[in-house]
Structures are given as structure tokens and as C-alpha cells.
Length: 166
Image (tube, rainbow, N blue to C red; front, side, top):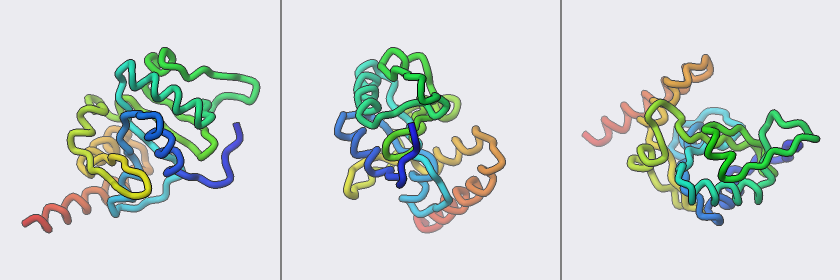
């Protein structure tokens, strides 16, 4: 699959919502809509791993024309509920841009634990985003060089939020 001309995370979110997928937006988009901005070229989500949600996610991914980023043009990967149940981290190309689906973005962090503290964004689409504290845990767990600056931005946002509540 070729990458789309324009990355449209809201179109991906709208598709997930239309199919009733239970998910929380994580990563750069989650940070950005809460005021901590860094460059990102994909939408990261943490999804519920129940059988019913995996079935809804599979239908949404089919609607998005999703295929693993690594898949060659002649390789077709069936992203059905069974396949999704056997994987935890899916890096996908869709007609609206890249989508990373994570079942457990950091040890012990699942949809259920992240959604407890998530913030609801009510814009043209309604969706949940991970709290800064959870994003910080995920960035620390990833441990990539690019995450060092993101960790500092998140720490500053947490500190600022704590001071504004005093």
C-alpha cells in the first residue's frame, strides 16, 4: 500500500468510532491535543483486547485498507480478530496515514488501565487521550533516543499542571 498524500488522524479516529472500537489515543497526537507538541507522522492507539473489540477493530482496519507497513505489494495480510489476538503491536499503513495499534504500550499498561485516567477530547470526533503521566511512563519504557526530549516536555507539563492546581 502506498502512503496517502495527507496524514489525517481524525479520519482514522472517525473510522474507529464508527465501528465502535474501544481505544485510547497515545503518543504524539495525545500529547499534542493536550498542549505538548512534537513532530509526529502517525496515530498511536492502545486498544481493548476483548474478543468483541478485536472483531470491531478488524472491521475498522479493513475499512481503512490497513496493511502492515513491512508488507510488500504482493503480500496480503488478513487482519482479522484471530490475527489481532496473536499480536500486540501493529504498525500499519492506511488510506489516511500510518496507524500504530498497541495492546500494551508499556509493561502493565493496557487499555483498561490507561482509559481510567484518560481525558476525553470532544472536537469534530470524541475520543480519549492518555494522561501525561501515562504518556511519560510509555516514553520511559520505549527508551529510544528520540524520546529523551519528549520526556522532558511531558515532565514540564506535569509540573506546570501540578502548580496550577495549588
